[in-house]
Image (cartoon, rainbow, N blue to C red; front, top):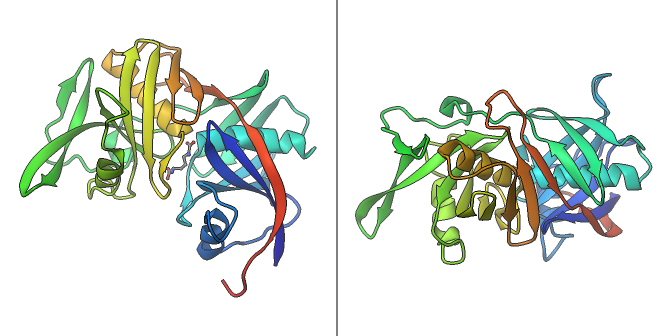
Length: 291
Ligand SMILES: N[C@@H](CCC[C@H](N)C(=O)O)C(=O)O
């Protein structure tokens, strides 16, 4: 089967976007891995599918697959690219779009050259992250708390203290002095695959520069370290605000660009993310058969 695709990126987090509004491709995890492969396929951190609205409350449905083939609940940078794709392809001319994801409805709004996404409320109950905190003693961190994750280091057990929350998908946030020297490739998978995260997690490494500026690197579940992670930026800023280190709005400097995150500090309020969304190229690709 040959399919049309659009390659997009938001702050360097890159995507293969597929229009399934007319035809559902029903891709297998192997197809997703092939499309995301940087040597044999198109190359992407995530594959995004634009699907018809399942009901009158939303304009579209949004399916997200990590490069490893697994379907996930949320993708912030992808959401902005979703909005740009829908407009560029003439699928909708609305300035505001309601889109259904696996973890609820998000709202996308065009804002100048970029897109602002209402990412919904952060979830602080560890059980809902999901994170198994049973038997663990949290450590006070500013006005909030972090959880200890045991780690074997040269035969010795050491503890990594992470803030845990969900932005529709699971996040662990580790405060670091300098993201440039943080051992992201080593510690990212240890945190993300820790048995206390039964669905694995995205691991963010957060450097507070001042109350309105941070630097962030994220080791993403199912994709490895990416140049930016939108939900990771939301999670890191929310954690920083809850701890008392940050004040909204916060500019997040990632490896691939800048995102702006705003949150009132109230658990009942949504987190808003603004950033770029760009089309890189378009093409057609033959899916190897059988896959
Ligand atoms: N890059 C994304 C997040 C994609 C999903 C994530 N890897 C997960 O498994 O939850 C973003 O911009 O939010």
